[in-house]
Image 1 (spheres, rainbow over the protein chains, first blue to last red):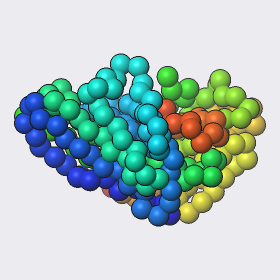
Image 2 (cartoon, rainbow over the protein chains, first blue to last red):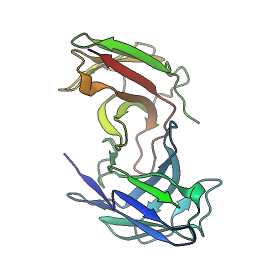
Image 3 (tube, helix red, strand yellow):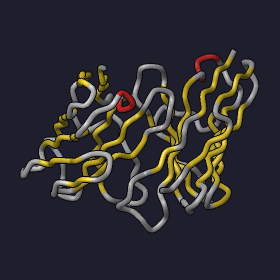
Length: 117
Length: 111
């Protein structure tokens, strides 16, 4: 089946620094990818929809200047957490759907655990 | 907001069938029912989806009531590795549509 990878799988950074998380669709093309955030014991919350070649669409309450999304190719989207703070510590998950297969399932990456100290 | 209601948690004995219910009383005619699960500290894993007919694959069976207002995911022979949070999601089949996750059901398979 289709595979979505994320890198890194976990990262620890100091408060005030920026962290980039990559999401790749390994064996299919995706013009749209989604970024979710999950706090402990909570469900996944959609942060933004990443569109290849255009600006991302952010959900209400998500700061677009803090969470920079770039979808530069049909297989890669990146999420950069700028000026990270301890409250940004969370599990970040991306997902993608193969282009042309609207009825198919969405494939999720394994997640990236961010810890800000 | 999620359009589904699921029990918060369930237990199941290893080797027995696990039946996970989901209510989606406001489902529209063009919305599919999807099931995903999330094992601790991993990304969600697709299980199965359907529109109105019952579906079966190597992982599970999906039973959708005739009025489509509820469904049941069946894991025929639960193992310890099936312990996870199971999410029932309704979604319109549209490329740009994302999945909205509710709190899901925490299934514990007991030895």
